[in-house]
Image (cartoon, rainbow, N blue to C red; front, side, top):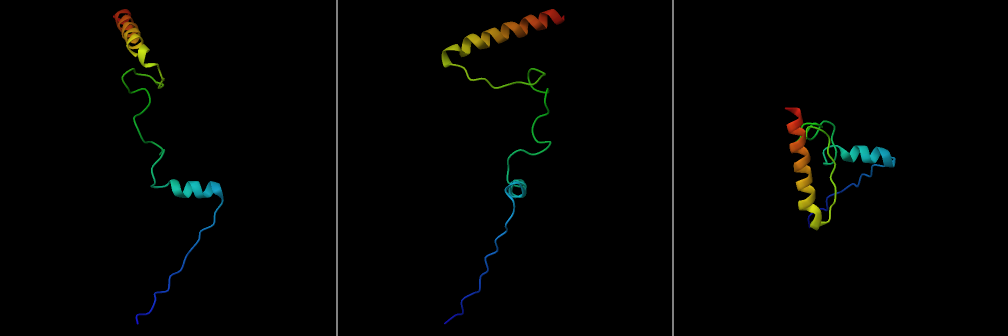
Amino acid sequence: MPKKKDTKTVTHVTKKSEKSQTLSVGRGGKRVGAGRPKGTGKYGCETKAVRLPIHLIEEVQAYVQRKLKKESLSLT
């Protein structure tokens, strides 16, 4: 009969804040320096996601296009 392997269970006890710091390394989530730099997107400034009712999307997009066109005309 083969011998059973001895297995040891190691438990690492830390404070909650230390644990979250330890687990965040190499496990996804926010990372310093990750992502597109602010102000380099389509509009040249910071943006914010906004939830809209579906029936207003086309109207809001048309409004934004008019504003952008008006701004580009005033710059020239």
